[in-house]
Image (cartoon, rainbow, N blue to C red; front, top):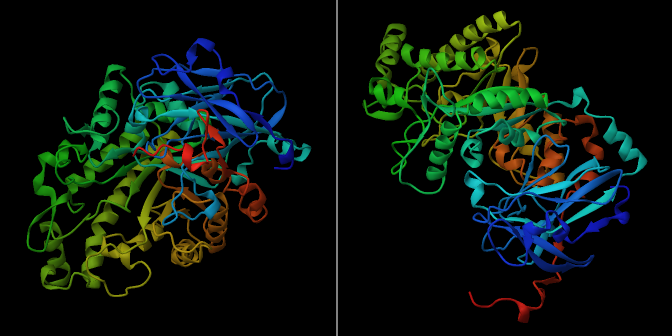
Length: 583
């Protein structure tokens, strides 16, 4: 930031109002103030725990004009769950902020970003005109995140230079909107929405930046997170803890409030000015004790064991097969509901999880006999004829879906999009022969070449789950065949940027590598988690600025830093004699 040396620290959070919502003791209906100091000075941080029912509190920043806002937070290293809600008075919804932690063995970060137990995390939130604004702090009250501790330690305000202010006031450029945010369903139990206002918090981080659309996970096979007229409602097994319990409570809460989360999500996406494409993951039964109800796969699957995928020996698997007309018709009817009843912008299917889609069912075997005069089970599983035949049934699902979308889109006066998230890694138990760069997809019945050639995919999201090298050379090589396949076609290719946690500059470098490979944009898996990491999301949301990324390293390097504590609750915290030693 241009005027970094003019930083203004707001260290005393006990100045928040109302004053009677803050005390030095823990208790119901209030935040707890704790003394601390850092190099910049002494202050008071605030905590609130799950049972406090602490209300929102407001801080007057006491300044006017444009500032970069940095948020300092603390978390006890033995109690890692942390979540703070914060907003400006004029914001549509709350921003979620967790204490950002990084791992040496998994995340692409510099050593100086690894937090020690006595370090605060300082992260860039946003730049805003603070004239007449209050900063409001709150904590989660429902869902999985309600079990977290909220902390706010300090704010650091950096005035914008004239150049920075002109850029901030110029607003969002349409040609930068190249990003897709993927919410794969976990958001529903994480936050247990039951009102439009609560849903707006989810979309607060997606508005006014480079995100153009959201893939909204709302179905697990034949079970939906919303009250469908076609499918059964998502269920969570009774009596189990953690996400199972919170997921069940979320559904019960939505039912009590007569709340439709998909309708609300579509409404809030429209308010935020972004597209929304509902998404399904074609799940099967999980392992016990989650084998009965772990969101999906829904009543239709329970009622129709005759439609299951079969091994060559005839054993049933955990998934239904696309070889059956009835299975495909059920999916298409769910998809129709999304674009017809809810007026969403298309359909997304997650193919990087939840296979098999087609195996050795009777319709597959019989049609193979008619075509080739052979029993498919007598051939090697990787025989190209076997792979192509299995894939033809999944392609047929996409043809039927495209036909339905064209029908509904004609009535609505728009083209409804088909988005597919595909894997790049080979997950087979045996190593298949090299059938080209699309081998991992063919093995799982995905004929992506036919999808692209037939116009069955508008947005092809290439899910690169392996981290690879920091420079993104692995991503370039992985993306190349998909970019070449889509050339002179209507399909747009998006790179799913991994890992989820990395430094802002690492994101910048890897994003540039993806653009150099020729992708049309980027996609981010599990945005319900990514958006609450402030410094990470501050970079994520600007990665549509393809031409400017090469010059953005100085900005990226300012988004996160460690701030060592000097004292905490009256003790010299860096002195080993002043630390707890009781286990």
